[in-house]
Amino acid sequence: MKRFKWPLQRLLDVTAQRELALRAELFTLSRDIARRRQAIVTRRAALRATLAELDRQRIEQRIPQQEVFMAAVATDERTIARLKKKLAEMESLRAEKTRQFMKVKASRQTLERLREEARRRHRKEMELEELKQLDESSQISYVRKVMAAHIRAAS
Image 1 (cartoon, rainbow, N blue to C red):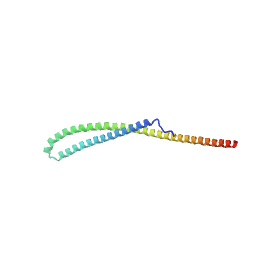
Image 2: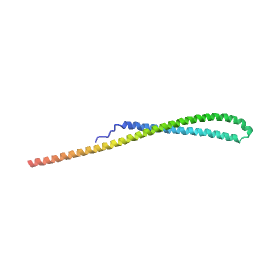
Image 3: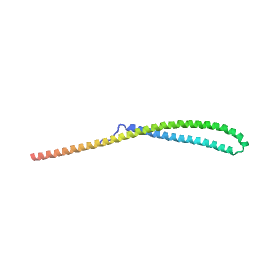
Image 4: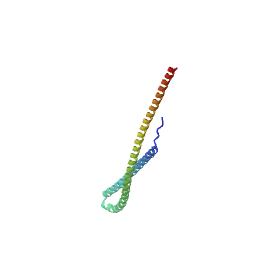
């Protein structure tokens, strides 16, 4: 029986590798997005905690520290704004990577379906070929028996 060889197997292998690579990129990107979100939450929590601490102090102590706090808040807000901008960029990149991933995944699934169809056709062709060979051998066997009977009858 002839072995099944699919001409698009290499393309399927490469597509599967691309899918794995995109999946890994998406995982890394999602992890980085989560870290960035956590950094924003942590900075905001630190600001709130410092503000709450200032609120508990008496007014004479609070006023000088509040000026320093307000300068620090401005710096932290700029940092948070940069983090949010980077976060938005990363989320749009993740959306693009997700779109690519879904496209590659659909392509891989289509290729796998085509390969299975080709494998079924190959199996069917091989079964038909076997049947032909069995028919031929049974016909040859029958003709030999008939000829042997004729030869015996003629002698």
